[in-house]
Amino acid sequence: MAKSKVLLSITGFNPQRWQELLAAGRDVVLAPERPDDPSIGYAVVWKQPPGVLSRLPNLKAIFSVGAGVDHILADRTVPDVPIVRVVADNLTQYMTEYVVWRVLDHHRSGSAYRAQQKRKVWRELPQRPAQDVTVGIMGLGTLGRASAAALRSLGFRVNGWSRRAGPVEGVETFAGEAGLNAFLNATDILVVLLPLTEATRGIIDYALLKQLRRRNGLGGSVLINAGRGRLQKDDDILRALDDGTLKEATLDVFEVEPLPKTSGLWTHRQVFVTPHGAATSDPNHLVAPMLSQMDAHDGGAPLKDLVDRASGY
Ligand code: NDP
Ligand code: OXD
Image (cartoon, rainbow, N blue to C red; front, side):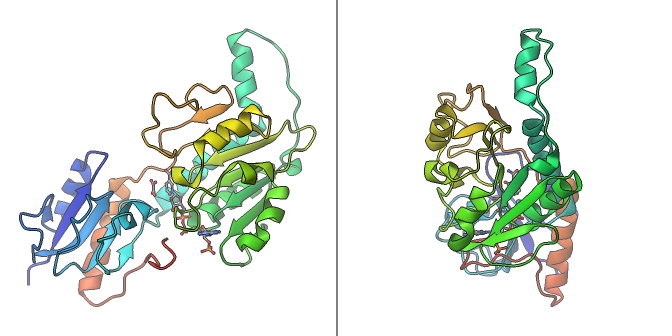
């Protein structure tokens, strides 16, 4: 029997490589000729246009091109079929590199040295050992745990916050609303690796940033957000930077993407901006496992890395 087709629906970047690689395993449809095309069994999507999945009668599962799935669930018409997200060593490695890079850069006064270099200033800045610094990670999932392990191996103290309580080796863990303030009060560098859900939208606001620890010698607390932009309030971050609540921030994600040219975050001297590229989804690493899952599922195997629709991640 012929394999069912894959609908590839990607907005915001070129789907060509995804299409080429998927076509090695199944027929690929970029836009169905009919919204109720019965030959489509799977969809591979990033920010699909609303409604594009809603009437496919034989859709068996939706594959997200990323680890996050808020871009899929934003479309209220998404049918009630399983959603598979990306859990892959390659993506985890990229995110771990990003988090370690940004934590070390803040920790080792990267922005101050870059400013000194511009003025040809030869002046050594104070150092403190990593053991004196606590990195608090919001979101202790696949990506948060990997970053925690890498930071621990460098000597940082690592705390983590998640929805449900549970132990993580070498990490002091906090959970839920009840644990949030204690977690923040013990955090010097805050790393955000949460999914965007109804419960997390806008969580990184001024009041939350005010709870971070500001210890003498460290020069203030630091925010690193590589989760999702709508977890944060851009204006609250600017306010916190301007009144000294925050010393510096690294932001990979923003309320509106691409970050509008008018945003004060672009030019703020205490802000480091990257264009939602902390961990790129690389089709060369991700398509083969997707095709294998589709074949295995057609043969009766359960899907892996499923999203819990009720929790939104
Ligand atoms: P996971 O689903 O593995 O982990 C999510 C973590 O967030 C879990 O620890 C979960 O808690 C916690 N969490 C969820 N909701 C809440 C809540 N309401 N309160 C407290 N904690 C909560 O996701 P990943 O680690 O794989 O990815 C995390 C996010 O990173 C993605 O959703 C995506 O938005 C973002 N991302 C960004 C990229 C970029 O390039 N900038 C690239 C890849 C991902 P619990 O453990 O209790 O379930
Ligand atoms: C993801 C992303 O969710 O790249 O994987 O943002």
